[in-house]
Length: 241
Length: 89
Image 1 (cartoon, each protein chain N blue to C red):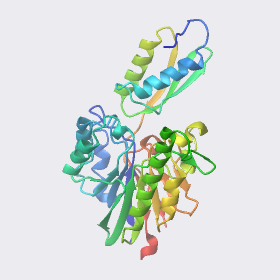
Image 2: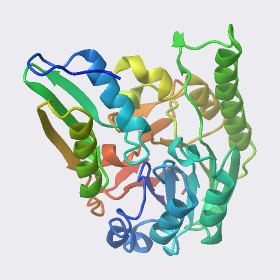
Image 3: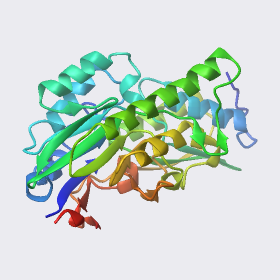
Image 4: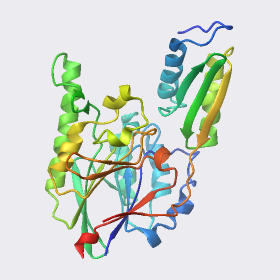
C-alpha cells in the first residue's frame, strides 16, 4: 500500500486568489492521504492573508502540514499567522515533526523553513562581519533543527518539508548568481542524516522539478509556478508492503 | 532614483530598480518576474497568481518609467487538479 502525498508551495494567497485552488482541493480526499505545503502561503505574512490561506486550505478532509516561507515572515506577524492556520487544523512545522496515520502506515513529516547560504564549494562562510556570521549561523541552525526533527521521528516513511532548497538540482532554470539565496547544502546534509524517502521544497519559481541529494534522497520542487497545477501527487512507499 | 531618458535602450540600473520595486513594493511583492532589456524597451515575463497582480505590476512600472516601452509576457499560473501522479517506488 502506497502513501499518497499531495504537495504545493508558493501559493502566495491574498483576497484576489481565494477560491482559485478550491475546486481542485475538493478532489483531494479521493486522491491523497495528506497535503504538504512548502511555504510562502501568503504575499506578506499578514494575519488577514493567513485567513485567506485558512479559508482555501482548511477543512479539506485530509491532514494539511506546512512550513512557512520567507514571504510569510515579511510583516513580522509569524505568531498570528501560525495561530490562524492552527485554528483550522493546519499543522505548522519549524524544526519539528509530526507522525500521521496514512493508509495504515505511519508517515513522518519533519519540516523547517530553511535559509540560503549556497551549495558546496560556492557558499557563504561563518566568517568576517557580524552580519555575514549571523546569516550563515541562521543557515546552520535551521539545518540542524531539520536534522534533529527527522532523526527524532518514529515512522514507516519519512518526508522532509522545507521552503528553501536542499540541492542545486531543482534550481536549474534560475540564474546561477542567486543560488545562495535559494537554498543551502546544509539542508541536504540534514536530510541525508536520516532515512528520508522524499524531500519537498518550494521558493525557486524558475527552478525545475526533480533532483536528488548527495545521499540519494529524491527531491522535488513543488513551487506552484514550477508544477503549474494546483498540487502534485506522489505515491511513495511501495517497499513497505 | 534612476532616470530613464527616452530614446536610448534602458540600462541595467533601470532593470535593477524595476526588480527591486517589484520585490519590495508592498502592493506587488513579486520576486519571480524577470526583466529583459531590449533595444526598444523592456520585456517583463514570469507568472503570478491572479490577473489583478499582473495588472498591478504593469501599472507600477508604467507609473515609474512613463516613457519606457514595456511588453508584458506575464502569465497567470493554472490551478487545475493534476491528471497524473508520480510513482516513487
